[in-house]
Amino acid sequence: MIKKLLGKKEEFFYVKGVTWMPKLKTNKGAAKRFSLTSKGRVKRKKAFKSHILTKKSPKRKRALRKSALINKRDEKNVRRLIPYK
Image 1 (cartoon, one colour):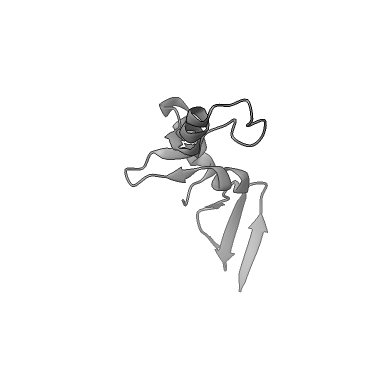
Image 2: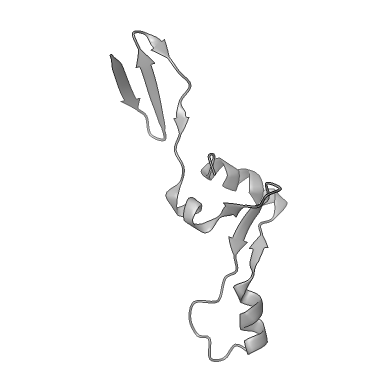
């Protein structure tokens, strides 16, 4: 018989007294905002592209369309939020 124990952010599965490693839960908000490049860096969208676009120049709006990489210092924290991506 398989039982499922739910912690705050992890799930434990055990069968007849044998416990496996906990599953990490993906943060869904982070999963929608970040993705990984082929080399493993974390990619993000640029900010300031959703509204008040009339005062921004076309050149600036074109530049905001492109994606960017997050800072190396933040990468460890974001990877923790998206462990299986």
